[in-house]
Image (cartoon, rainbow, N blue to C red):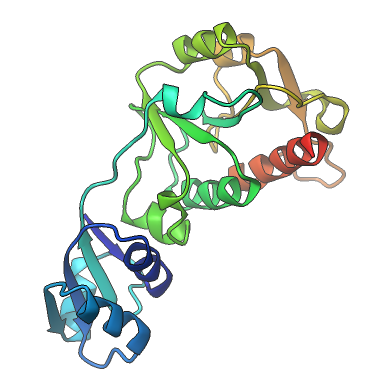
Length: 231
């Protein structure tokens, strides 16, 4: 898998992740990155910008790394804490939204993110770039069925909070203890069955004419209310 961009490259280089090869643009002048690549004896190739552009579909800033595919965690890895905080994504499809949510979750100190295997964006180069490399700091779990996973979480003592326009003001809910916050699809929100399996529905009051928020923005608003309450 190719990952790209200066911040992402530094994240991988600083965290001793296995890097198969580095592709560097011929006029690349970030000597911190170059020195780290040389110090780790990583195989490198210098290319023209036109050849770099062919390798990835995004702003690579002159540096592309060939790394191992992302390794997902399992549910047990993120449910060990006595009062852990988890975010579940109900079929998020936009890699930029997913990357922004990962970055927000890392800033909020969540224990992990749950995504479904099907009809959902996976951790790819765009997600990693948008997350500014924080995919390496947040545990992400892929599951076959969200509703079955919700039942497992409930059996482990979690309260499940969905996000939707029709619900209780998100500031009026109690997010202390084992908590899972669910963010829905960009166009359709959380699915009917997932909504029915939630213990609470958190709504963000809107004062303008727009009746919905970007998925990553909505997740951040509710998540940091939970962080504030949990101290």
